[in-house]
Image 1: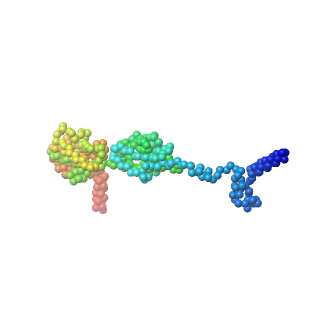
Image 2: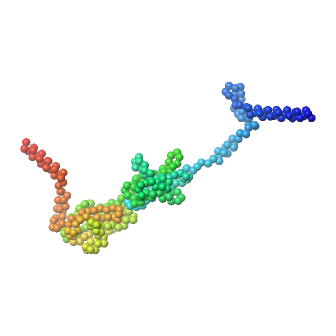
Image 3: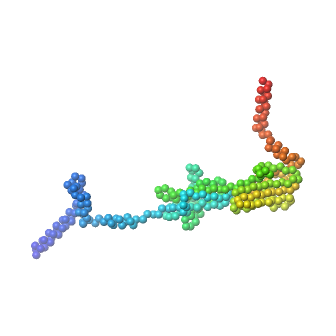
Amino acid sequence: MKTYMEWILFSYIMLLHMRLFTFTIIKPREGDPFDSFPKNFWQEFSSPFTDTPENEDNDDIEETTTHEPFPFFDESGSSVNVTTHLGNTVYLHCRVNDLNGKTVSWVRRRGDELNLITFDKHTYSSDSRYSLEFEAPNDWRLLIQYANERDEGHYECQVSAHPRPLVLLVYLTVVVPYIAIDDDRGVSTPEKFYRVGSTIELKCIIDKIPHRANFVIWKHGMRMLNYDTSRGGISVKTDLHTGGALSRLYIANANRHDSGNYTCALGDFAKTTVAVHVLNGENPAAMQHANSARWTPITLVVFLLTLIVFGHNNLR
C-alpha cells in the first residue's frame, strides 16, 4: 500500500513539474539551436497549456464591428442654383441625412473670404434678414427676407464631418426688374417736352416682374395719379403680360402746373423718373435740341483755349 501511494505522489510531482516547465519556455533568439524547428513549433507546443483564443474567435469579433454612418446631402450633386426676385423671401435648403451629432453651419463666400451666418440653430449674422429655420426631419434651411442685389452670390452649407467638412454649394441669383420710361421712338429719355394744351403721354416699360408685384404706380412729385380725380383728364392704362408690363399715362390739356418729375414705380421693387417740361409757345423739338447741346464749363474752356492758340498762330 505504501508503494502504491508513493507511486501516485511521484506521478503527481512529475506532472506538476511538466506544467511549470511549459510556463518557462521562451521563444528562441536568432542563433539558438532551435532555429531549425518549424516556425509554428512553439505555438503548437504551448497551445495545450495556454488560454490563447483561437483565430476563429478573432474573426467573429471583427465581423461584428460596425462603423458610424457618414453624413450625406439629399441633393444629387455638390452644388445647387436658386433664383428669386427682388424683394422676395427665399429659402436656401440644406437637407442632411445621418447627421449623428455633427454640426451644420451656413457661410457666405466672397472670393477667398468666408462670413459665418449660422452655426447649429444660432444666427451670427448682423443682418436681421438672415435666420436659420430648421424643418424636420433634416432640412437646415437658411431664410433670407426681402432679397436684394447684394444677396446674390455663393453660399455654403457645411457639416462638421471628419477628416474635413462636408460642403454643399448654393448660388443665389436675384432677378432685378428692368423699368424705363421711353419716348415715341422707344428710346429711354430723362426729359420730355410738351406744348401747353397738348396731351402728355408717358410710356413705362417693365420687364422681369416679381410674381407678387401686380400693380404699377404713377406719381407727379409726391402725388399719386392712378386714382386722381382732382385735376381731371388723367388716365392710366396698364397691360400686364408674362414677366412684364406696359403702362401708359395720359394727361389731357397740359399746362404749366403739369411740369415736374413723373415717376413710374413697380410697387416697392423698382422705379424710374422722367422730367416733363410744358412750354408756352416754344418749339419743344428746338427746346430739347438746345437743351441737349448746352455748353458745359469744361467744353467752354476747351473752346476758348482753342481760339487763343489758333489766334496766336495766325499772328505769327
